[in-house]
Image 1 (cartoon, rainbow, N blue to C red):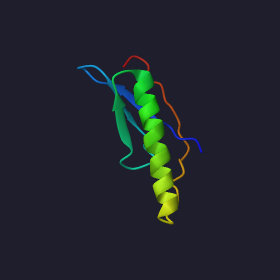
Image 2: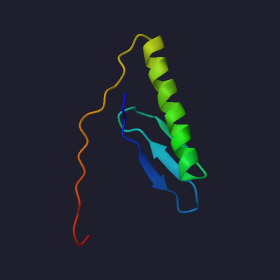
Image 3: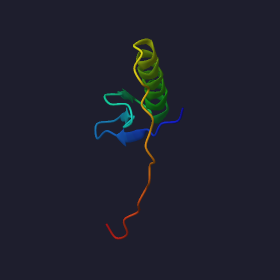
Length: 71
């Protein structure tokens, strides 16, 4: 399965990572690599919990990026 991860740099350092398709799936890390490793683990656990509970595993909708010129 593939999911989009939103990675945001915090003003005071570190990163927050979110998987929009998995509600509440959020993690953080001191570095970009650490945040990505942590969100991967969080997403894997999220999916495992869905399967264990007999619930459907969320699938991602199509993601589209836009570019704003002059903003």
